[in-house]
Image 1: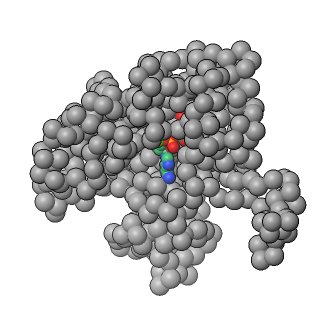
Image 2: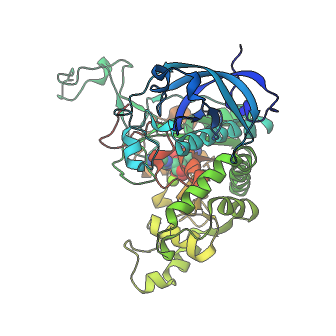
Image 3: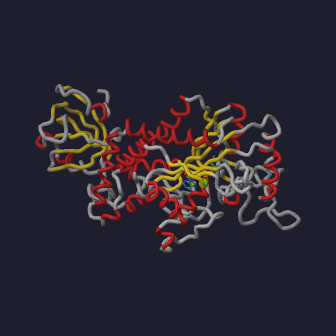
Length: 476
Ligand code: 4AD
Ligand code: MG
C-alpha cells in the first residue's frame, strides 16, 4: 500500500478506506489514542488502538518519539478535536524511543533546553511550525523576484577582499595554524596559502551583486553570510542568511518602495499559506504572556501585528529628523537612554525601538545617515555630510533591512575610498564599474533570520535557524 502523508489524510473524506501512514508518536494516551505526526502539518493524526488486538510487545514500544508505520481504516472521528481518525489494524514500530532517555517529552520544555537538543527540537509543534514558515519565506523570496524579472545570482562565499567593512571576518586558510610560513618581515606569507592571498568568508554579496546589476539589470543574492563580531544578542548570528537585491537605474526612493513592497509580500504570503502554523505561534505567545505584567506583554498579538504591518505605510524619516525626535523624547529628557543621542552617532537599538514602538507605532524607514557612520559605497548627498542610505526598522526587532543608493561617480567613490583607507588595488574590479558604463543603481540587504523572527514572533534569533552559530557555540 502506498503511504499517505498526514496533511493529505486529514483532508480526505472518511469512507472506511484502508490507509498507510508513517510518523512519530507525539503522545500515547490511555493505551488507546496515539497522536501521530509526520511533519507535513502541525496537526497530529489520531490513531485509535484497540489494545486487545495487539501484542504487549508492540504496545510497550509505542512511546513518545518512536517511529511507526500504521495500517488501518480512515473513519469519521467519534471524539471532538478532529474530523477523522485511523482505526489501527497493523502497527510496525520502525524505531523505538526509550522514554527514560528521549529528551522531548510531552510537556513544556524551555527554549534553552530545546536549543541544547536542537537535533530533536524540530519534532515539537513550535519548532516544526517555525521551520515550515522559514521554508515558506524562502520560497516567497524566490517567487517575488522571479515574478518580477530578477535573476538569482550566486555570489562567492570565500572572498579575497576584506574591504566591505560590514563586520569582522572569519579567515579561510589551509596554512598550518601552529607554524605558518613567514615572509622576510616575519609576517604570515599569504602567498603560500591556498588562494595565494588572504581570504575570508563573505560578510555580504553586495559588491559582486552590483557587477550583476550592471549587466543583467535586476539581480538578487540569497546566501549565507558570516560575521565574526562578538555580539551575544537575541538578534545576531555569526552565520546568517541574507537577501540582497541590486537594481540598475534605481534611486533611493525606488529602493525604499521595493523594500517595503517586498517585506509586505513575504508577510502576506505566510499569512495566506501558513495559517495553522501562525495561529499556533500566536496562541503560544498569548499563553506565555498570560502571567506577565501588562507592560511586558506585546501591544498586539502576532497575527494582528503582521496584519498591521501589511496594511500600513511605513513611516519615512531622515536620520536628522530621527535625532530631533529622540532629543525631544521623554526617555531622552529623563536620561533613560543608555547611549548618547547626537548627530553623527549611530542609532542604537534603544533609539530604534523608541521610534518604532513609541513614536510612530509602525515600521520606520530612516534615510540619509551621516556618511561617517556608513560604508564607502553609499552615494554622497549634496550636503556633503550625509549619504543616500536607508534602514528599515521593525517593532521588537530593530533593523531588518539596510541599503542605499550606490556611489556611481568615479571621482567621488575614489575620494571616499581614500578617506576610508580602502585600497583601490583590492577593489579594482568594483571601481571598474564606474569607468565603464556607470549608472545610478541601488540595493539593500535583508536579514533572513530577522524577518523569520518577526513573522514567527520568536524572541531569539537562535530559534529560527536550525543550527545557530554564535560566539562559543557551534554544536551540531
Ligand atoms: O546592514 P548590513 O550590514 O548591510 C549590508 O551588509 C549591505 N551590504 C546590504 C546591501 O546593501 N546589499 O546587513 C543587512 C541586514 C541587516 O539589516 C540585518 O537584518 C541583517 O542583515 N544582519 C544580521 N542578521 C543576523 N545576524 C547578524 N549578525 C546580522 N548582521 C546583519
Ligand atoms: Mg546595517
